[in-house]
Amino acid sequence: MKKISRRVTLAGLGTALALPALHTARAADKLRVGKAVAEVYGYVPLNVGMQHGIFDKHGVEVEEIIFAGGTKMAQAVIAGAVDLSLSSGPSMQLIAKGAPEIAVATICESPAFMGISVGSGYSGDGIDSLKGKKIGITTAGSLTEWLVLALNLAKGWKGADAAIPVPVGGSPKAAFAALKTGAIEADVGGTSTGYQLEETKAGRLLIDCSTYVKSIELFTIFATNAIAERNPDAVRRFLKAWFESVAFMKAHRAETTPIAAKVTGYTTGVAERMYDTLIDKFSTNGRFDKQALATLRESWTDMKTVDPSIDIAKLYTEKFLS
Image (cartoon, rainbow, N blue to C red):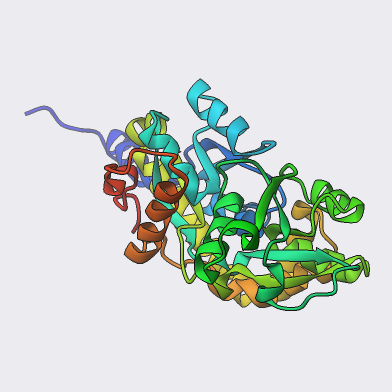
């Protein structure tokens, strides 16, 4: 029998002991993460997690890419330029139209993130004052258009009584300008728009949209089919880090608000109000709510944007959630 020297034995033992350390020190998986827009408060956990090393801890290096709207980001998904994306729940309909991605977690299901704001010259008060008013939306076929439609349905407004959706673009600045010139009398957007108007004495938040819509799949995390198939473990670790970031936010208001203000472009005061009104609305586990998905599907039917026979269960998965 061949003898193994003590030196070789110790060398082998040293290598074996080093293996766990080598595994731990492996290079992080780089994931290109797109945001449909920068201003959405629902996407802030990404930046909180990046700044506080939470994604690093889970072996994920995030490359943040900000787009000028969901359409631009959808083009990037098709081109293979992103791995994961943060977008509106209604973007799930793009999967039914062939987009190579899958919804992997919900960010939030509360319409309280969205509100209807008015300028300083608006004399009405409350939801009933919106009857027959011109309300700014981002684009035709968008979530904001559906929120105007849902308002009309909730109030039973038809014909001359119906609120009128008017496309003004996706940026808060465009909404501010349209309100100032009188092109619109109100605007549907993030509640942050109303808070900003109040801070500058240029208007106010009239209502948040949870006043008439109880739940809808509002903001969602998507993974491209390519990354889901090539590196499913990286997707799982990203989601674990995301929800750990949400937990950090809930426990650290003082650390969260400056980051939110910086990435959304709003003042610290607005960021603090968004935190206080919205932090409890974030999903803590990413699991999809059946009623919120049902409302989403109804919105597509109402606007005739997808085949009404679509099976929404084929547009999302929970297999990457822990």
